[in-house]
Image (cartoon, rainbow, N blue to C red; front, side, top):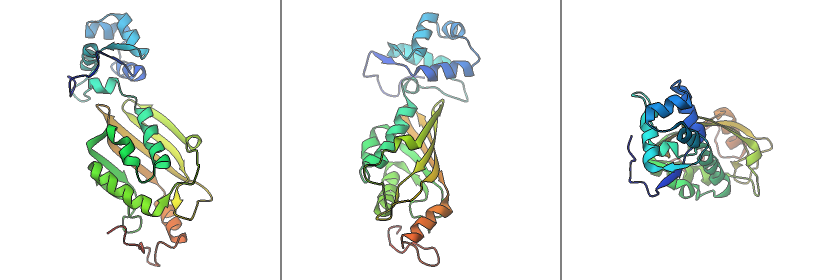
Amino acid sequence: MPWQEPPQQKAYACNGELVAFLRQKRGWTQRELAQESGYSERLVSKAEASQSISASTVADLADTLATPREPVHPEDLICDPVTLAKAYIAAEYEHPGNNVEKIRHFLDEDLVTRLNGDPEVIPFAGEHYGIDGLERAYSIFFSIIEPPANHDWRPWYKFACHGNEVIVWGQNWMGPIGQPLTQPMQLVHRFVFQRGKLVLSEVLFDAAQGAEYLRQAGLLDEAGKLLSNQNQ
């Protein structure tokens, strides 16, 4: 697969774990990948050690590792999905209200964001499309939810990478404004990257528990409808 845009550097450090993952998925040894790609086993070892190789070689390796059902792009081989997933979570806690701007550089224009729950009860729930949709969802979210002051989120989240996907198990401490949580809410994030961009973000959490937090904060009426007009 060719680069989507002309590379800006002559050489790039590969995501060695991803190169090895894709090679093993094909059932190849390093020697077999070298033979298939037309490069030396030393170069394959260098790529899997996350060292820099030329942009043209990155493209050749991506083309060799690709299958008709699973395309591999050069940008994939130089992307670190876990680092980007951590930046996404960090922006929520450290830059509320401006978090999308902090991560815009790795958001795909056609990003799909899915948040479970009933939008009639949890106004930021549902499926949101594009960067504008994500911004609207977060605008609603941070109009009623806030992170605790001086909170270090890092010990509360675990990240696992599988190719271009990252699964995050988290204990969220963000709660209704002025109503800090006394215990965290368990949630799971799923991030999918392609060409170094986030193309899918899914968040699963206990929607009933989330609604209860909003109810305790006085944001829901007896029928479970949001009292504010933030979801309109």
